Length: 283
Image 1 (cartoon, rainbow, N blue to C red):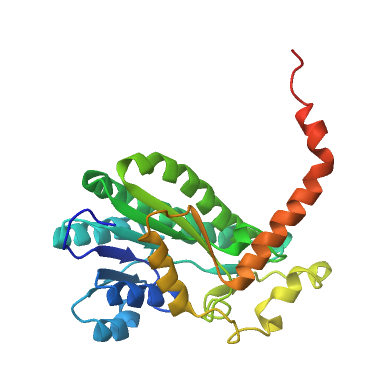
Image 2 (cartoon, helix red, strand yellow):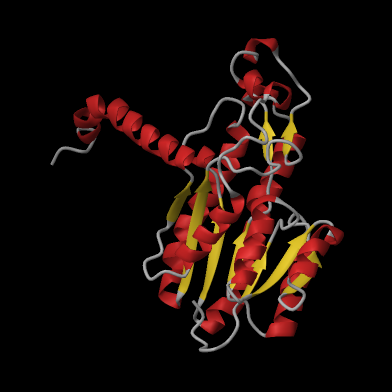
């Protein structure tokens, strides 16, 4: 990735206290690179610091705080003079039927899952542009491809991240900077417990749709088939490959959702294709 031969890469990763974020730190460090591991509570990174004492710089970062984002990036540049990679991993889920979602909850969700990553991207890009190399990995979700009842706001926040990433990829590719979005399926992390928030509003008419996916009705936490360490290692392998895809689907369950949504979408649209084409002006 870096065009500096024999020089240790420097990666900045958000949301490293648990789950995929922690796995990213391990995968990057085990690959011989240096990791700037961040979390809202720095003390949650102590075990990683002990594991890789010479390869980790641990910093406090709340991605909803623009000033803190600026300070973290400045600290990395002051110490290393560059940033080779950014992993926008910090985020959380939110379960609510669309009618149940509160404005305050949704605003905070987008601040964390969308605006925070965008602010980080804007802070690191000036340095990557000077380097004429770098990589940005934005962790999305299979919910951006097909959103289940109760996850509409979460899927929308990830869909927005993917939309901006698509434009970003085309803008920075000529500058030697890679951009990839990752749509993971279910991995055995605390996403469905500590990292999942619920609306305080419950409307009985949605009990059989969105209501079925509330935490108290969940039965799969701790049984997810996805191994976050294997997932993180694959993602890092792909970003260092010659042909980096814009979108990487990770996990057999995510692939099944992706393929089914593609098939159903084609079936739904096909009967209307000819009429759609005929909406043009006639010459």
